[in-house]
Image 1: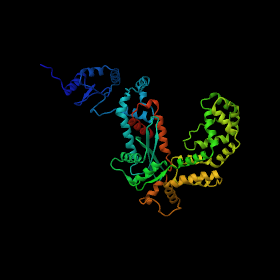
Image 2: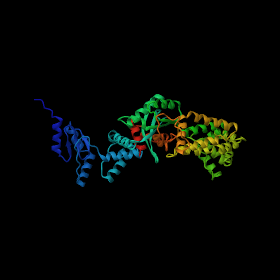
Image 3: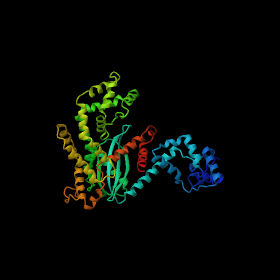
Image 4: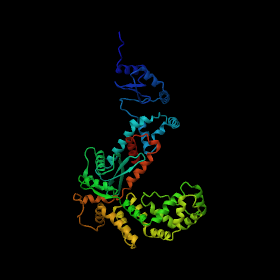
Length: 490
């Protein structure tokens, strides 16, 4: 007669009987090793005996006997709190989970914490999502019944993907609110449609039982046309929401205009950056000849105010820089020849002095607007002070730069609304005209610490770029996104 195959249920119970209830538990479908806290395949006896002979099981069994402890398991869905806490700690500290695959680290942890260390795949598949869900639930609890602001920006990462991050923050009447990163997604393309969908999708994940449209009262973005267009379409559903484009970025655009008006200064900054790049002999010469002078900066032009800071550096240290440049050999590098020619221009020093004297304050203004927790009235006052100072420069270049400022402000309709709200707070305004129709007096109270820059979402990209190092590249973007959200919401 053919051999009758034993059912899974019978086999599982037999293994529990054979090896003992202190080792295995069986719930009718899954055989679970209590000692290792893992599921064990029970279709074949070989799988069971193979697990019992593994180094991990033997080590855990010895440890259990030594400590005289017994772990209990009732269902297949039970998860280890230790595994989860370990995963969360690594994510929050931005330590790649792959580090747990290092045998030296594993042995160290197992030796001193007296527990088996999970595999990287176990943490990725089972615990990363749990950490993400816990983070999102914590955010939901913290924004419950609160007014919020939203900020969205996108960037292109090193993999060539369009990545958009969504930041929210609570708006309180008695102090600055908390800020959270709640989404990081890859967009097929960056346009008003994808941004609008991302906005709605993200807020639905925040309020899965129904979006609280009236609690969203501020939307902060950059001034890209597709962002402005997206905001207009979104406001049809969020009638209390004011859209403002980032004022810190707006002042940076004014700095870009200053840069365009002074091409010789721009050329000096660009080429001096090249002269000392990967040139230790020139760096040594500089330090020897100008020991009290910091090395020339290597500004990242796209960072707000960086070019202006570099121009101010050259104004402050022009004599020392000129002395060192004269000692360099023009035949050593093309950039040296260009710098020698530029620095001999008679109007270069006067241009640097003009920039420093008339526009140096812009770097301080940008820093003020980037500061978290600033009162709306103070932030608005910073912008108004910038306008007043720019308007005092009456030469042709000064007028051109002031017109650029006016152009930036004129396009920022939300700034006009927040300026009016600021005047309410200062007692300088009594009329509710020109405010969104659905905004009430109660809503105005929550704008006390409203941000007028998108610096927080920019900072989240810095964290993202740090996470996208070579040892994170194997992460699926879904897991990378969840890890980023856990990391940013400490």
